[in-house]
Image 1: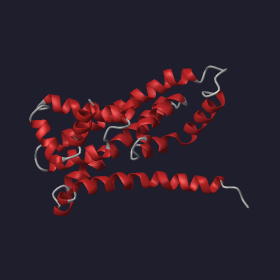
Image 2: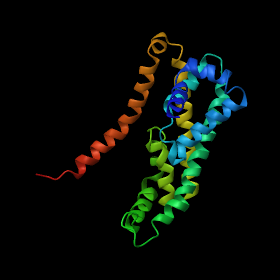
Image 3: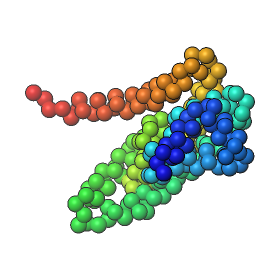
Image 4: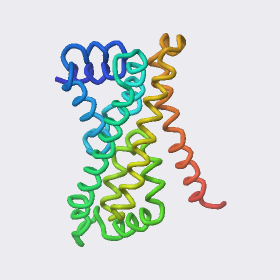
Length: 218
């Protein structure tokens, strides 16, 4: 059960396998629906954190550059999937997630954590939603936490749209422009891995800065 799933996920980040997949088992609208659902789940559903995000979009761009997918339609469709996925994550956080913190006797989901989360998202929520789009795993949980923190929905939606369009467009265009470069073709897996590592650098820098600020003065 696990092996076929891993093989399927791997095929999503390899241009030739993705082309084969979209022309056989997932041909036509079924292939488009599968790509939509993967980005939707990876963007906002908590169980989708293991799904490929950056690497899938980059691969879609490479396949579009080879003339096998319409790039404009892919950007529009997958940006919509990301926006809707984040919307679902926000709704889950705003309802189920928020309810967990309303139990005054809970030692884990405490009211003070909820208050801090709300305060943070009121102050930094906009840039956090945009920034999180470009960071794997964090991208999956940011909307949920924004919902738990009761971030203003109109404000959330505005930054969600900006972040989703920026993330999807940049990743797909990057694959579209670089997919035909010989060195990228010869080292595709390494290049995709490099993109993921680079996307994690800003988060690592923020953690490093935060640890320096909280470090005790000797």
